[in-house]
Length: 564
Image 1 (cartoon, rainbow, N blue to C red):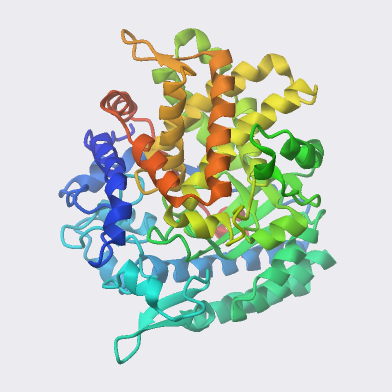
Image 2: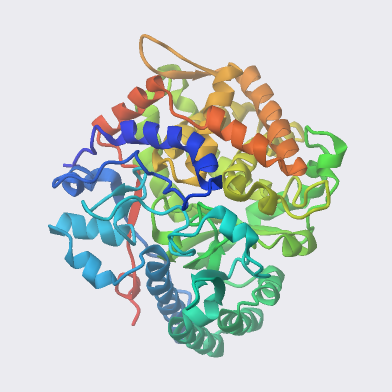
């Protein structure tokens, strides 16, 4: 029997999202940076971990490796080991202290396991609720910045690389801010990971992949990742892949600058990938058709992008904390994106697991009975896939010529980019269906499944960029009449025409704010619409009462894969 999550979950989520309205101005003040969840999440009670044991569904990460020879299997094992090193580094980026000492403070096995799952003493799926009574709220800047550093002090510091994706901010003996490069801070672990990548390159049968592994090993040791990103973009037919290094900046809720280490080992589904490949070719045409003024779509997306499906056999580091990704769109470097486009990796085995164990049960509780037939895995796969493709649409540099969108929107950049990708993914589905590339009669499946996906993602917690983006979209679509809630049944019903109109309207708003680099507008939209109302909070509580998991955790590693 699945343990039922706490009835306090969605009250905490409501409070946490409401606190976002205060977070930006608090962090602009002269005082030290205020924690993201300060005043919103009480210390965990003694039975907290036991009450949240059902928050995760366990998924075993396996794949058919029978087509690989001994060298191929050895290479995969080495890549898994390199990704396991990312676990060690990410612990250091998540908790400013000794890991084993922290785990030893857990009062019971359930709490210890939850701390291990979260790479620290805060529940990532529940508004960063502290898992121990004396740790306090999670700092918005994590361990990337000194705990006493103010935003004003950071802005005034004459450090050329302070906003780099690959530096830590520290204080020298005189108390002044200095930067420490990642490759210096994590030297021992990175040397170990680089050696494993080079050993894997030696037994790789794919020359391009071997070259990428060697270049990535070099990048881990000097933080110059752009050459290896370019090499990664040039690969098209490698049967095994790895995403490794400091990738995403979700952990830095203070500025959104600092990236966290992760590692994912992937086995390509060749047949499925061939079916998907044709969609990437439509990007330039879809960019021209975006429902926004011409100046906001003047950039041309890279034409070398590709789209593939994979089975994941290992999630390491930042990829394995909180809500687990089911698709990847990389690289994040805007220069590489403009030159080469991006690669979109659909993680089909974990996507299927989330659909079966989470999405379908959510729909069964909250979607109108006569629309349940529109909840399909094909639609879920398409919505997720085109979300990733849509990251390549829109604009990367602000119209004022002062820099990138991500630099202009700062701590709102991640949630805005995720929101843009979601609505532009629907725009792409509408456009491709009109061209006959997708079945237009199935659009209602995409819309109803999309709504169920919002209800799934808002459960990830107030500190998750995807959850904030989904909450903005939920409230915007509700205002537009894209769906309505039956007050008698508490179930949601999609209005086809209004749903399509709301997609275009929100696309215009998000693309315009991004192109203008309008931080104040981004903050206003998130603060105004990034909140869970009492009605939705009560509906989400039904999901907890029904024992529906929030996300997944993994049984993974060399033993699960049958490798040594």
